[in-house]
Image 1 (cartoon, rainbow, N blue to C red):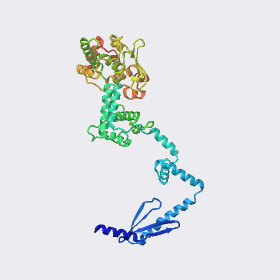
Image 2: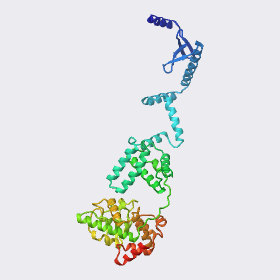
Image 3: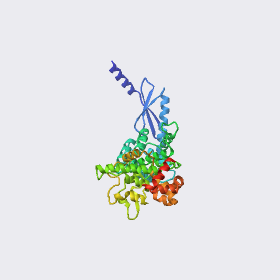
Image 4: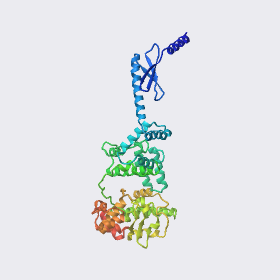
Length: 440
């Protein structure tokens, strides 16, 4: 029975003649379904079936009339084309065929692109610029780039202290930013850094620490750019984060009496190490270079005995191991030359056979002296400024700026204190002065 009804419906549909709506040479056929208020027709432009739901036939005719009018208008515009225009139109269609892109869509995309360029250059130039600077590799997660950077810096022979600092800073960063390295605007990173300084933060950081963390993030983004995870040849979002001006922290200085204790503790530890192995590590040379030449710990860890120029009375810091990436020289002062004298003729790294950080902790524990952050370097610069009263000279010797020397180290110590410092290790006649200083 159901099959019979379907056959009857098809016969009735065929019995209804189509309604043709014409406008000029354009025509639209409306085929009617019997018994329902639904009409449909084929769009002559695309050949696709168009359905129209209307309550009666007249409304369907009105809809078809509008369509026929649009078709005829398009034909008239096409007929008005010149031969050259017609060839250009056909060539455009041929050029777009490999892209499977309609002409009107291509024109719309071109117009939008030119608007965005705002006369800054051609679309071809913009595309070439994009091709040159687009990431060469797929973006990677922040955590993966951090791990890759740390492995690379370790392989480069960076000091343990540098690696610990870099790892600490970037662990904070990757804990907060878990997406791809290319997905963070500068504003969000800057806001995060500022949040770390807020009093309500678990451990508010200083402005100086904020700048140090920022520098580690810049290092991370530059590494990602070098690996092709970010566009090459242009600044990263980390470069857009401003370094805030921080007041120099006060110099942290050891007294001559404290330094005497540190030297004695280092001598005892070195003697014990030498008794176990004649080729064992020696911590006193590293302490002496830090305290009486002001060389940074990370630089000392990369120095060799060949950097000690005995005949010239200089310590040479090559650019490749200098923090500032600039070569400079430090005077080999008499007390330091005497302290290093027993090691003259040695080769290789000065800190070979030892973990400098672990040995330093042992020395300070044995000496009973509180360890100060950058204490040796701050002490050398402070006493050297008092000794020479020549800021440019000390700035060069310390690999620093004159402004930094003036703001942080000027008038920190007296000339008399400087004499005691650079007479270390103490002669017998100075021991009384040290004891008086301790009891003062």
